[in-house]
Image (cartoon, helix red, strand yellow):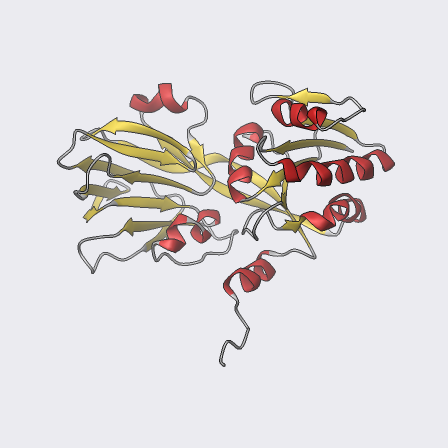
Length: 293
């Protein structure tokens, strides 16, 4: 068993649970590698045992059986930039509030190993969206993909922008809004949901176009097939607008056309039998509870 471990360096509270996980992994004879900065935090807490490390550029390969992310949903989004197209299954240990991606309770961290060894899980492939525009190659490089969403939005102004939108070369509409979200099924429970978008199960072959605070009230979220080629062109009072891929963001000159497609690879997520997507959905949205008083 070969396991990679990643976490945010500002999360000191994750170290005690990391130690528990390492102890459990040692009992099953696992080979362990820890992200370099996270490992330094671990050593600062008096760690005595040494482990190999990895960075975003080296140390990981397809031979790893599991990638454990300590943190919240945002940490998993950053974890995908390490895994990329290597096909290493990711599992999130939540060290904060309940998330839709990082669902395993930190108090049950030993079960991450135990239930994996028992085979009490499935691997769900999550689709990604990919940004295609040479103008942003320098900013995003080979990290031009997003697990949750690609968003265009206004910059340095209170004025709305106009997002001219084409689907498979056919004109759809021009959104007059603060921006537009192109969301995957995974991202449907993130920014898109907070802007009125629908919840979509992770295995659906769909994308969602969700306008951000549209001026036209008849501009509604639109669900499309994930093999659709999306072309966007932004205009507005300012010279530039923002383009974000999950938590990574860059500025782009208005009028530059960008193309968004489904990425050529998927991210594998470990879904334990005890922590399913539907269970998380019920807990997070309080479905099935009688809230009447």
